[in-house]
Image (cartoon, rainbow, N blue to C red; front, side):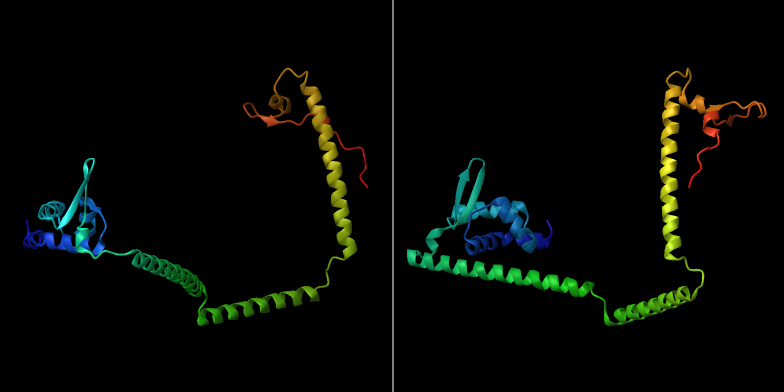
Length: 228
């Protein structure tokens, strides 16, 4: 055992007694060790030994619950508190609790304000961003000026005609696609091979070993209906 650990173990009874008297609440040996180990460097064996010694000397009280022992300060050393004092203490606790809650709420507000201020741009950053926005606006203004000065603008009538033609052609395309799909499905009902083989076959015009895709005749027929 090191010298510092030995000195701490020698003073353990006094440290433990003072701690139990100040806290005035029951603790297990593990609780006392956990609360005092970091501050005073006490080992668990020293804490257990000090608690047993103090209990034997009558300086603290010991209660056994199953396999666990609970230690607490001797209550005879404290003054008897009457009901009035207890009510006064309860009122004080309520007031202090309300004060703590108010301070916690104030802290939350200040933390939120601090977070907002931290995430905000600084004055130099804001100035740089303003300058970048001004330059961007100038570029867009110049671009708009060039567009307005151009002579090849599409008139609203031409634009509307393009939209109408596109709508008409898309409608006709969907119609023909549906007709082709229905026709393919009808043929495939009695076709002895797979759908893939129906569309793909070996072309006799290709070199040996080269496969070519051949569109069925009914799909390659010219459209007889004139659009428009």
